Image (cartoon, rainbow, N blue to C red; front, side, top):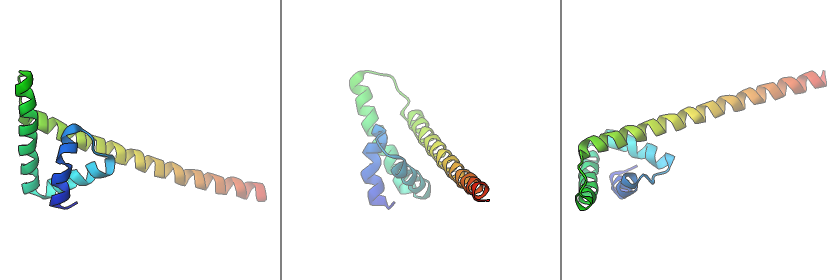
Length: 106
């Protein structure tokens, strides 16, 4: 993901609408690009801050952004673990089927 794509995806990140693949690329780019992380912080503070002011809610936006980033990281880790588990199960199934077919044929 480049900086332009990252900035285009910021509103969807804030709204929680990024799919797994985009969320993963978004997180990787943010860790590698301090300028984009700063842009995310600014847009988050403006977007959420304006909404909170309109609603009259108390808020700690910096903490909330940190929580959202941590949640996004957790989702990516969970999804990756799920994909790895699926791959292992597929391999085990193929091995089992090959063994079963070998047993039937012999």
